Image (cartoon, rainbow, N blue to C red; front, side):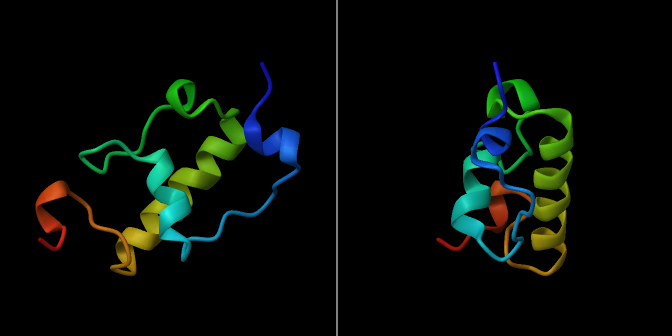
Length: 69
């Protein structure tokens, strides 16, 4: 099975697009595994890097308790 990003020829992941990144984290805002995301290692690393950068820039929460209610 081929990676979704490889099929669509996506090389860059934007850390500012939080709605897109939310698909690749669990309900507790942990980064999901590559098996669950159905991504190759290269693109899983890019997703993880983008999620970590979005967290650092305070665009995405680190945990579920940090979300606005």
